[in-house]
Image 1 (cartoon, rainbow over the protein chains, first blue to last red):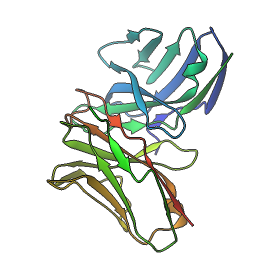
Image 2 (cartoon, chains in turn brown, orange):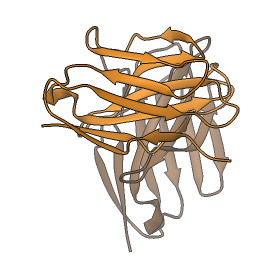
Image 3 (cartoon, rainbow over the protein chains, first blue to last red):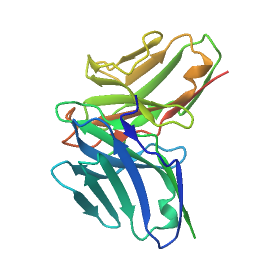
Length: 112
Length: 116
């Protein structure tokens, strides 16, 4: 039972353009969401988070949007850079719990 | 301030042998999580531990897998009688608190287990 889904296994974007990575979840109890970036042979590193009391959170080139009614969140990277090429995981958790449920990841390739 | 340290980075075992993976959390972190990433899959939660306590092991296979986080020393994920399907990357993460909404998890670089 995959509670957090990233339906696009891969995405290619031209340098300088916008990258949009999508994530859907099924558990309505989830109220905190994070995005992690992972390079090959390295551990995931935290990128940005959003609480369900917000619908948008921005940090430099990275913006996360949350649509609670659709149980959908997206990560926007503008402008995309070759160094952004990595696997991106979204993760979700519910209040009172202590574990994050991760999606299967989307491999982003930014073309120079 | 060292990050989450995992060792070994790579481990090769033959079927039936035991695998021990170690994780030292970040300084000041007393909460440890283990996740497994099978080839072409996402990160699957295995277990959450605090010092000397297993808080949630709902993601652990029922047999052959165990985890501990002793009062002194690293957290250890132990896999007995390994099978080929155990081949995966095992990631340890730590945090200052077990409450997910307070802070993110800091991950180690992972231990890659290959079972021949």
